[in-house]
Length: 91
Image (cartoon, rainbow, N blue to C red; front, side, top):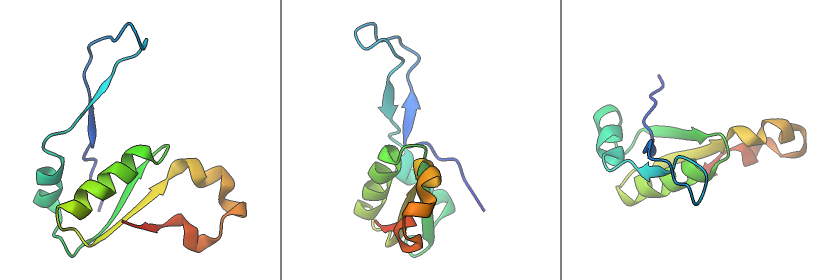
């Protein structure tokens, strides 16, 4: 069971000063998670670098979710150097 519930949304308005398309927070993130998960469910939140997933875990914890974990795909290349228990951080 997996759901793609974006923490941030693409704006599609070019920011010339930063030379990129900026992201904006998803105002319905917690409500969308509540549609598919209960506060006692175990959730694994992932993103490529770990930054968005850490913010998402904090937001879910503030909303009353108790078993929220984060992982980063950036750790994949470091797997041999990181103890297995370090792959999940309590949110």
